[in-house]
Length: 416
Image 1 (cartoon, rainbow, N blue to C red):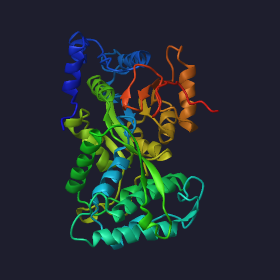
Image 2: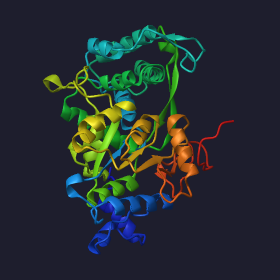
Image 3: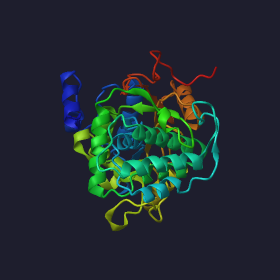
Image 4: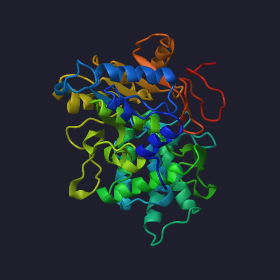
């Protein structure tokens, strides 16, 4: 499929009567963001930040270049490219591990506990991880022993994929976040860099062509196994965000470096973030994510040494290790969407502005959203919101967002 490139975005802006940033540079001014679907006030505040700290300002010091840090999933794009890759890999049984390695990968670091609460069978029974793991291994062994790929309706494949997403969601909700970050990545073990990049791009292409929404993956009744029948909703679709691509381009034109810090596997994010076909076209060395061992040229099960898991406070440690420590200062601008980004949005005294893609969340990121909502009349706020319609994956020209399945915009999450 043809993706939305930066050139296409700016051409579309000209067609709509929007002036791209280059004429502003020709006039010797700080570049302007294409209006696109920005919340107007949020765009103005970011443009002011660029004007004050970019290379059009008299105080700009090229030896002390400011920089911005972006989360990737659900910030630079709508959706999660790594979770979508899990769905794609499971649907196509595109794993490369032996059955023995799969058993090791899916058991690694997960405590022997029982899932309760929302992570029960469809009949309401608690599930022991060891039973769930036994079912995963049995399904995988059957499928990997075959000489032909499974049909999309194969009950064994449907069982494997339902229990994989159930296991990931349950681990993510009940275990240390670092465990979940590594667990989903280990499912890609055995791929070399070229094969993994091709798989990630195929997944991106497929999901970009799908509608934004949800579907439920459920275990066939013939494959109940030891754990029983489980069901989990998954999100479908991915969307590019031309506003972010344009912002990143304008920041770089203004002498402000752009980095990504993601809780997904670094190589998977790089496929999206560095390929000009998607419109972002960032330098590969500016992409930070979870790093794993690649001994022998293939993705392994072990973590890369001396690098934090880039999740929550791990993002702060990575930014300090890779950027702030050497430069002596933190990021000027931080952009995120979830609790996983709260620490990097708040921990650096040098950060002048935090941009939050408003997903109407509670928790720590919800406190930032509430603070931003309370500062809507403040000329120089610490945080700003950007609305999105979750039904389409597209931004809205407002701070308010529309949740999936609704038509009504809201500014912050409300509790009944």
